[in-house]
Length: 274
Image (tube, rainbow, N blue to C red; front, side):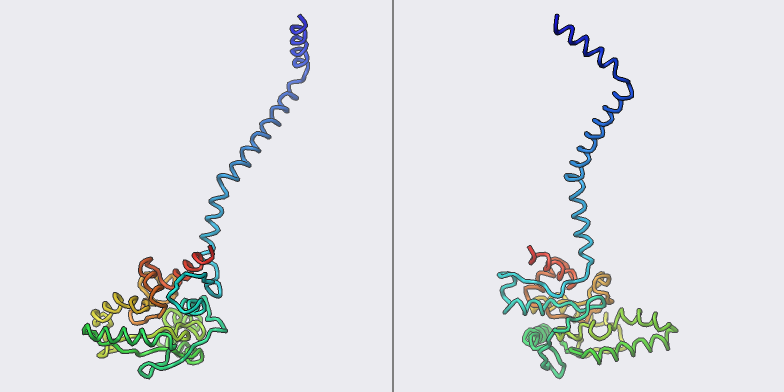
């Protein structure tokens, strides 16, 4: 009897509460539930894409000054400093570090860093054994000399192509980079051409030489510095004769991953920061 009376009283109380207040209470409850659901969704569902987006963005961020190498990575190299040197990036968007040091020597009267000489010599000798006759025509060039080459190219485009100075500079950078931004300053890169190379003819005429080089260069620690379909990464047009020394382990890994030097640099940076 008492329970029935209480229930009747409860119903009367509910009836006495204005409808608009009941609706307000329901809205508050719904808002509270909605807030909880949204919070959980944000934490579990959206945070992952945000992290991925940041990682993608970071791949286009300025390159670190050097790759920090942990122990037991590329252990065939003499030191971490050696790896940092071998993987140094020098391009239109990344100037050579001011503290970078070239240990100059000569190979067939061409200046280069001494670290590349032994493997370069072995590659040219082994090519000769396979009927491929190669010679080095370009190596290290100082930043001042590189600037002269760049300015000469700009002037040529202005005179012969009718370019404005700004447009000529932008066009020149696709093939001849300014001093401090050119591979030639690393001492690790060389131009390799057939002994009977004729500059007036298309390099495709020497397909066998470049096919051999492209196939076997990694065995000696060299890579094609400016490959096809990588211009958007290297900032330089395809050049079949320009090779860069990165060390045998690095070169083979880059071949396996189908990466140019810029891509591999980011890859190694990510791997060694784990």
